[in-house]
Length: 161
Image (cartoon, rainbow, N blue to C red; front, side):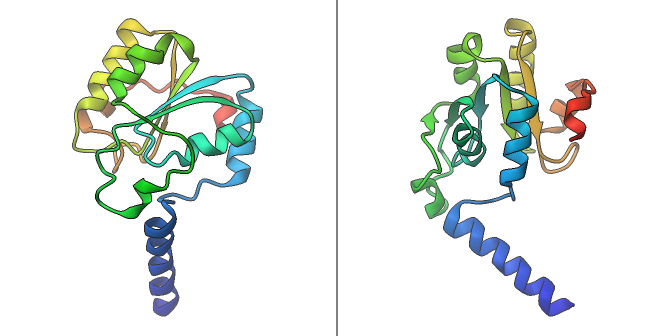
C-alpha cells in the first residue's frame, strides 16, 4: 500500500508540474456546472493557468479569465495556460468586468493573503448582484482566516450535485 501511495503522489506532482493541473477538475464536473447554471457569465479571478475557465469555455459558457500571473516564474506551467488568461489582479478585474458578469469564480486563493477579504468586501459593497463560487477547502488551504470569518454561505440545492 505504501508503494502505491508513493507512486500516486509522484504522479500527482508530475501532472501538476508538466501539465499545470493542480486539482482534478473533471469533464463531468464541468458538464454538471454548465447544466446547473445555464447562461451564467463568469469572471474567474486568480485563475492560475485557466483550467476551470477552459472547462467552462469548452462547454459554451462566457468566461473572463484573469490572474496576476506573478507565479509563472515558479514553474513552466505558467508559460502554457489552458486558455487565454488576462494579466490582472482580482480587485482590478472586478472593477473592470463586474457589471458584465453574473458570478465570480475564486479557486484556491492563497490562505495567507488578506486580499481575498478585501475582494469580498468590494463585491458586497459595489457589486452585490454577483454570486461568488469559492472553490477549495473551507478554513483549510483556501482563502485567509479573515475571509472565512467574513464569508456568509448561502445554501443552494443546485450545489449538492
